[in-house]
Length: 471
Image (cartoon, rainbow, N blue to C red; front, side):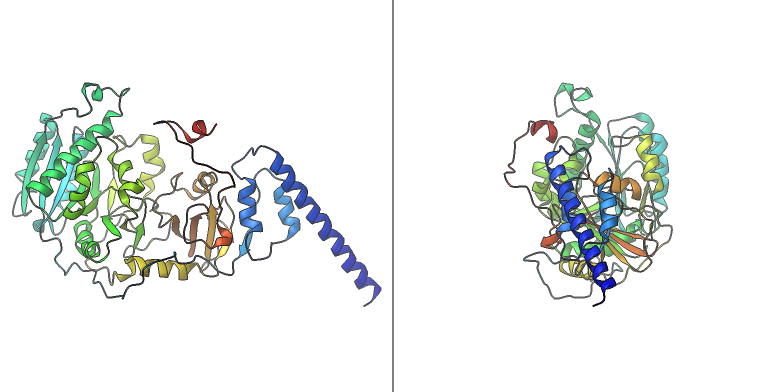
């Protein structure tokens, strides 16, 4: 070995030791200091130090350490997601997506309304234009007895929505009796808008399932427009609720369905996060939910683990309904313009969605795991820049780091539309997978963020924040 080579090797060794010392100094100093950003030491360790793959260029890594927000660091994984322990493996059978099974032979659509006549007329007009309307019963359920609303409903009930355009039409009116006591009307005492809506849902769904005996109910509200294949979508997917006990609803809404992403209008996804917004359930489910239905905030209750019990919903990649309500019980103009106004909306009439067996739980998980193999790991915050067409990227996040990634991607600031805390985003010909380091059961052990030693559960009072309870 010549002298020049020996000097070069010695120089590299010294530089490596210096880099290691800098890294140790950074970690120990960061351990003593109170974290000032949501990019914590545990986030860095889980991304860089706990993978089996070697770290990237140390100079670049240490330059990122010295910054308040580290730069993007990419790591090549030897493996991606893994199957859940104890995941069921079932015999795969073809499930035709053309609605030929006739599962919706006794289905009803309930349109919930209150006092927004300017939206209601547009919603009823969109509903009246749907193909297949003659195969379903239409109920317009009005909360209260506002005369202007009743007149709009009557106009359609005697015209575009009357039989034979529909199988049957009926206008319901509910007496607005506050079930949370006389103070329910006071916004300071309760979020009264959510309370009235939740109580209205209970009243109407009990009537449709228990009194009218319908097998399925499709739930819509008075601020929606519908894709041409809105009813066909439910006819095609109803069979999945019979085949897979891990599914409890079908929705026409993709929470992450921004127009800027590469969604496929024929394909569907599964989500562990209840989406609502134009959705369908079976009578068997309502018999389970009805006795426990909350008097307020029904949608948040549906997202509780104690309610969902691990069950999921199927939804389309491209939305089959468009929300037009800038103001409502769950909406304001700013949020509407930032998110809902940017959503995709299918404009084509589709009658066959192909073989739907890929949506069965075991097969869906198998395909997701296969998709992630040899994915490139990316550290948060992750945006859409620098992605290579045809590649798959896996980005790990925590609840602390997620809002920054969401801001760069244009999606909601908290995870929605995820499957066991894995969110798919097809962008610029690439596939971006977002996975929660703490809660995703599909992450391999070396990528998961475990609770710190000594961590214990602390009870909190109702409406008390986590930060306040743990102080």
